Image (cartoon, rainbow, N blue to C red; front, side):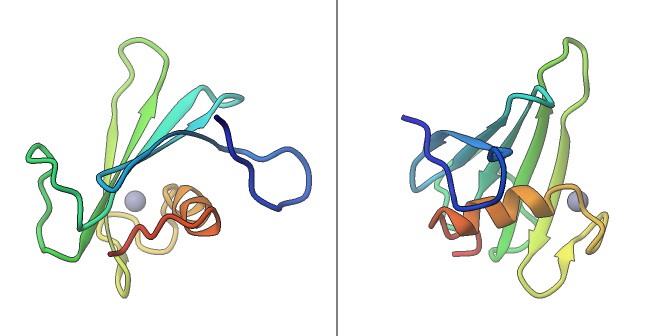
Length: 103
Ligand SMILES: [Zn+2]
């Protein structure tokens, strides 16, 4: 079941999957997914530099496109892109919908 959150206009993201281990958001108009792995995630394949790092994977649906991984910490932001990070909107959407990406 898709959820929406209170923003003006159509919501950018749909929730494709929500568990304690991950939140998967679909952006159907941009044809991409955002996979959020919070620090509490028990998935062994998620590699994080510190225990308080949230891993966010940008996954374009186009064939042969590259996934981009963002390692984000609550105080520091994204290790690669700082506050200019493309994962910010997905993180905000996660927070708005009640998923805590930093726990
Ligand atoms: Zn980033």
